[in-house]
Image 1 (cartoon, rainbow, N blue to C red):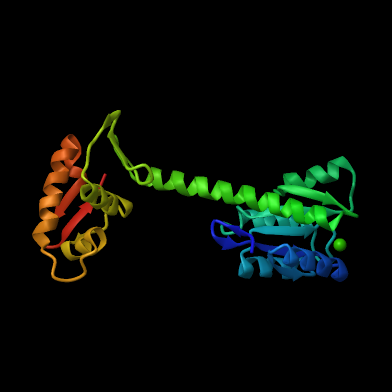
Image 2: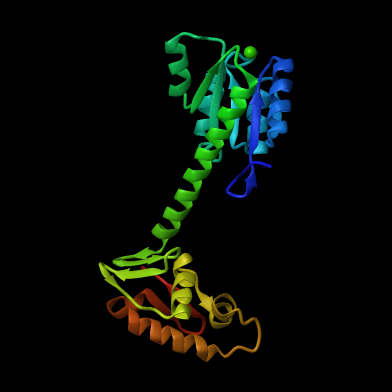
Length: 238
Ligand code: CA
């Protein structure tokens, strides 16, 4: 099975020539992709919402609506914005290919195309999308854990105030990351024992208080990032 970020790659084929659609589906399935096929633009849009494809193979000439219009609608959809789109076009003129790219397609193939070539293009596009997603995931995690000059990188475990690195103990680090990952959320001492220490029952809530105190000492001027909510527990706030 071909996977992006550990998930099987889903390819939606929107093609009104049924034999062609079946041929593409067969070859993509053989290559390890999961496919779904639609024969009209309306079906294609419905299938896209349900199937959440990683890559869409989109014929330009569809009976009900232009593939270009389908492409624009997919790009306007929050959930499908990042899908890879390859236009399948019988229109060979340069400006018509560019229309597809301007409508938001990532790539295009001119009919008659070689099915093996389609499979290669889908695979390359799926790989690029996977790399971008992984990078975005890493970046957004890092961005989420930045309060004022305090920067916490959950991947490298680097903690800094401005340029100054802070030396936190592993549990202080885990405590800080747990709080900062959901800013504003109040964690009870029991929740923190469960999430940071993996202690589900019988833990001592004072353990949390002691670590919070040490963490605050290490945070210096940023000690107030970890706020005490009397009677409830702790939360992080910028
Ligand atoms: Ca067609």
